[in-house]
Amino acid sequence: MKKFFLAVFLCICVNGFAQLIQVGPQISTNITSINTNNFSSDHTNTGIGFAAFARVNLLLFYGQAEFGYAKSNFSVYQNGVGETEFKLGGTDASLIAGYKLIPLGKLGNVRIFAGYNWKNYSSISTSNNLNSIAIDKNNHSIIGGAGVDIWKLTFDIRYLAGLNDIDSSNGEIKTGVTNFSLGFKFL
Image (cartoon, rainbow, N blue to C red; front, side):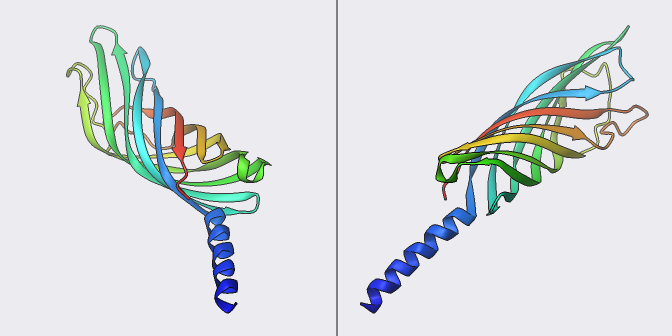
C-alpha cells in the first residue's frame, strides 16, 4: 500500500512540475526594417530563425528564455550610388517576462510580454559594395509582444526595437524587427 501511495504522489509531483516548466523548439519569420537618416530610402525584407525556449510559469506570470539562430535582411538606397542589400545572420538570445491576460488552464492562454534581446552577427554579407557600412556585430533590442498558447502550441507576435547603432562608421542605423513565431511545448 505504501508503494501505491508513493507512486500516486510521484505522478502528482511530475504533473505539477510539467505545468511549472515548459521547454521546446520554435521557428520564426521576421520582417526587418531600419531607422536611418543616412540614405534616401530603405526597404524591409524577411528572414527566418529557429530557437529553443524554456518557460517558468508562476500563476498568471511567466518568465521565458530563448536561444537560437536568426537571419535578417534589409536594403538601403542612396541617390547616385545605388541599392545594397544586407544579409545578417547569427546567434540570438532573449529574456522575457509575461502576464497571462486570459488563462484557460490546460487549453492554453492569451498573454502579453516584454523583454530584452541580444544578437551577435557572425555572418554579414552584402549584395555589392556600393553602400559600404561597417556593421557592428552586437545588436541590443527591447521586446514587446503578445502570444497565444493552444494545447502544446505557442504563437507569438513581437516587435524588437533596436537600442544601439549597428553602423560602426559615421552613420546611424537602428533595427526594427517584427517577428512571428510558432513553438511546440514538449513538457
